[in-house]
Length: 370
Length: 247
Image (tube, rainbow over all chains, first blue to last red):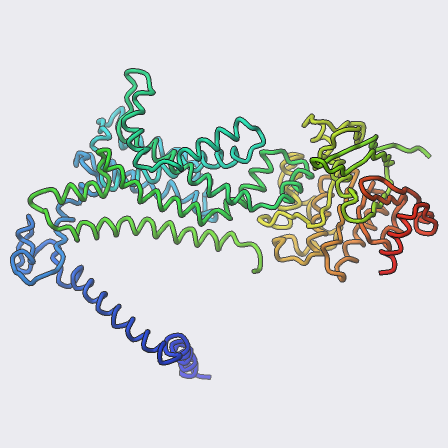
């Protein structure tokens, strides 16, 4: 056989696939053609808008865009391309909010460390994993010190935080804190001890029965009422409490679903070997239950990550809040599409990443032949 | 000949809500004895052996294993479970762990054995059940007979002096039953104290010291195998034996 022969076979393979799946009957062919035309129209329109006819930093006259009146589409009626200059102009706010720009390196430093902090949890076959896990536990303290400040660093109040920083802070910290809490809640809900069980049931059902917005308002307005005078946690912390409780209730239910799927025989086998409750839970029940619960857990994580944008209602500027603030600026107003497309893209990247990771995990944890 | 009583059941009763599963069960097992328990489904035979390692709690009567009485005291339950191994009808291997991890798990966590040593122990028992080559596989990749042999090895790795078998071959395809029974026969020859719930009468005739027939929560008949099979006293036993020996 020559390479030509192999080429022919592979070409035939694609050809056969296309015939079989796209053009198997005249109705199928029609649908394929209509769909292709549709995709082409939408795709070419979007690409034209977003890339080919778009302004980035300069307009079609080659002038730097300093406000929206410089955008090509404002100079020349009939031009319809995007004017991305608003993203460049507001980039720092999108990334750091009102964080003092001379201190922004501290945020960048934390952004850079974040992947190192989570890699040890996400992947188990990396070299030096033990040290990555240690780092995961040290990271929150480093991040707190770097972001908030302390000895040697000027204090930057959380009222200055904003944009991606707030979105990631609430998303990552909320999920990170909710995960252990949700395991405890899920186990508690199945406990044989009536008081623990009812506490967990009441907590989960209450939190699930209330919209996140209500929780955010409650945390914002009412939390200070419950705390002693003088203790006045800042807005971001209040939001974090609300987000964490909300997420832990949902995640607990996802995990409970996994726990229920474990056959009773697994527990009996573990008990008959002499393992105690915690050993059985940690070594036998949770690894299997969490594996089953991966899709719903990731589902709640993606949901929460997007829901963090609700904090704009209590006056915090997450990515979406910063975008809306940018649009409220007279020099840039009316560039809605550019701002919302950009924000969507950022959210999409994170959520899509989580979704792909969950698929990878499911595949990796599969241990049977089926 | 000196005999040591390792299990004593005295007037044991158990209910599931209103259903009286075990009625005044008396049973004494001596060290090294092999007892085969048979009876129709729902007769309480599985429940009885599951009470011996407290997978089920009895409501009254006493159960003493190695001089330790089974009560709600978790310490006693732990002591007994460390000395009593159990093999289940459905194998109940841990599907997320490899074969060797399944076996070494309890020695590592319960006996606090170093990992390397526990794995050597695990390999030794895998040799004993004749599937050392499967050590790195996962349970889902093994046949039923292989899984049950792993389950036996897993139990043996804790070095118990009593083994409970709850219908160990009932979930197996016929051609795999022998490989499991062979392992059990070998174990019996080595002097293990065994309580076996099974309908494999050929196995019973080969290894049993005592046969027990249960029906409706009671021990109806207890006898040496030759008397049990050739000269059963109760009509219920005769009927049962005629049904399972001639099917």
